Length: 363
Image (cartoon, rainbow, N blue to C red):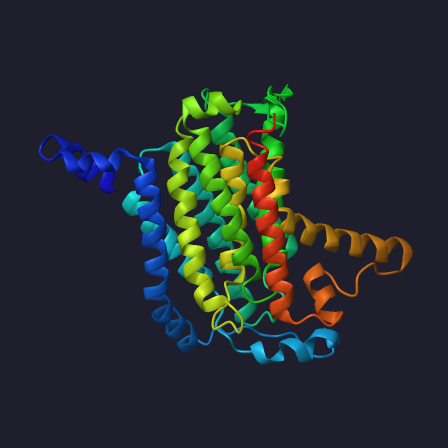
């Protein structure tokens, strides 16, 4: 918004020229989101506590192995994803170009999936135990959101519709109409993967923040014609504005982590996890880094694969591969403390982010 209000005044005072620079607005968006999250968190936490929207730890007979490790979390306010969305939305509104289609699409997917997660959290807290919305209902809603996103990109003649592969200079193939199911797979898969990862204090938001920081760099490079051509990566017009979105996501994530770190005083709930997964997936699609997302978001891939393998192994052979899935619970049951699991996953996430950035030059 400020770019529309203040940049036109550059002829009156040259200092307003700064608002045209994406790097400046991205930095300010990150700081703004962080400050909003820090300032609003106490109010949001008190409000959620007053509404009695506390986390319900499943009973001992349901998850006997984890009950003693997690029972102290019972009653901790959840739906803290509202805080992330508030900080992210405020920063984007202030520092983003509100007429940029890619920014609008990224924010739209994030808010839509956040609304779905909010409905799921309410369902869990209002008489439906710990189950929430049915798996079919959630999946159908996610597919509808992703389908609207995919169709908007498919009908945009300026958007590249080829498959970009890391380490290769040239696109492998044009996707054509197959771009639509491919986008659905990326957005829905990422959203659910983050949801599965959100099981320990600070784990999901810490990993997401590292991914968002990596995507901030990639968005800027993808939206800069000269740098994109130099690095042999696809240039996507307008994608540079996603730098502001990703930087705001970093700030919001760090602000939320301040209160979500162990021992957490608030949980993001599905309101946050579904929204964050949608944000990451949408940005990856918009900057043509869909396949690279499997590397930069390797922790989320590992978490999702552990669940898939565990279910498949038990149904086909009657045996479990892990002590419990998702895999972060496996390490807990092996005796690792919650903080140790979280920090070690953060370290892996940071290494994967650095490896992902290295692929930009290794072509």
